Length: 344
Image 1 (cartoon, rainbow, N blue to C red):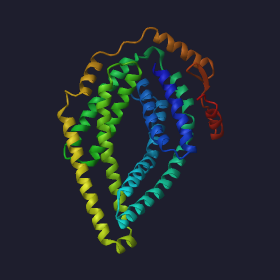
Image 2: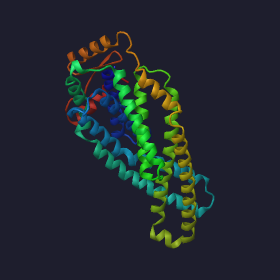
Image 3: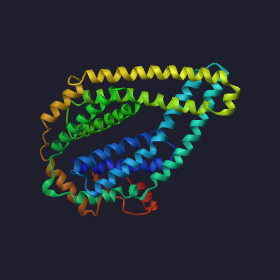
Image 4: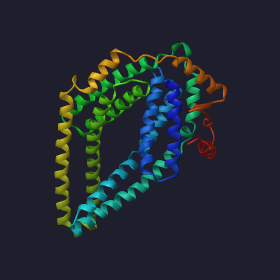
């Protein structure tokens, strides 16, 4: 089951990679980051500890791809926030200030797009399918574990790290610790999503709890980035010289908003910390790790047959009844040619 999910998620990731390299699509940038995490979780679940060399290379390439897109994604979110803010403002001077900050964000976005595409035009990303096949070939047959057992251990470990990160975030409210907790929340959510995709039921309450928490943390992060961009824009010497009073008013307004966001995030984290042991997430994790999901009848035979077909076809991927040639270690022209032949 995990091997099939690996091939499925790899195909999705590669199709989104091509879209991000070719288009200015906001949704594709976000989706590529999401699917990189989903693919990374499958690789980690299939691997022993420590990760074998092929798995390490794949995880490192996925992490770097995600990081290279982070600033681009932040700019997209900030531009949307700035457009909504400019529409609400009636004062012409204040509107012009927000439009100036928006132009700063647009220029930064253009730089980040160029930077991200240079990073994404990486041979290790283009050859992920080839590396994935080598990774599967090197998996020792006698040591393969049931998917439920692997995920139960992964979820238990992720939940323990999540609780530790929450405790650190609540101890002093350091922004770096809050951001680290935000990352742990994402990682735990994707591990639980993987358990759902492997057939685990009654998981929606736990995922809903994490999504709500992630939304609150994301809102805090977005406003922090907006405050940073605002101070950078208003620090322009010419604008500051001619509009000193307006700059002071905007900075006071931004400072009040930061205080509001800080209070909101403290209430959110305090509530999460106080609910430890009794939330929908904790209850589901305790049950899931105590009762690993049973393997569906015939699943092992199905996966074995599929893997055999995968190998006999000369590294062909079997997805939805269609054979799709995986990406060889080739230049970008071959990559685009192969991706264009993928069924929609």
